[in-house]
Image (cartoon, rainbow, N blue to C red; front, side, top):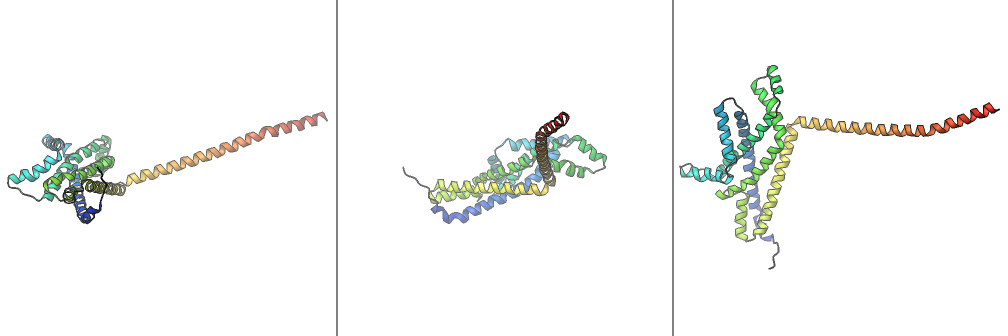
Length: 272
């Protein structure tokens, strides 16, 4: 059986692919922004002294993390429609993504909050800072900086999981791929293109997340600059010590010859 890759039949569908990729990116951005805000509130609420609120947050997190994302989309789109609540596919997909990423972000951020030393919080309280300023400056900002790589990974996973929205006919990238391959009968080529587009979107999300981290986390830049300066100073000291060692070695090598010559001259003078 002879088979060769042929991407020519897909060329007329490039605008459709780009529209699907743009819809996927829009869904991801909206879900990430709102879901991270929801996760932050849930993370603080789970640490609340009110037991009913902490248990309610735990129930939400466990319910979302232990059920498939596809089932969550079906519950929102088909389940609510059965009781008379109809919503567009885009809205249902985004709400499901917000609910999902909110639960995962809540646990990630809560782990960061737990890593803040209790002494820092007590010191802020002694300085008279309000609870909101303590929560923002002392707890949340350092926590987000610590768990930011894990959050970035979760954002990328959520973008890839948006492919599940094709099951409710949301015209995102995977749904577009299904339509194109049914029209062209070039399944392998179609899904190679889709995989490349998902790879490009993942790299784009990672790049944007890295740039945002560099902009918002100023302490990271200061620490990295200080570490570079320390390493440069250490290299200079090492080079200076090596140069001093070479000078000492060359000086010590010339000293025995000079003392031997002076000893010979003294012996000749005493003999005469």
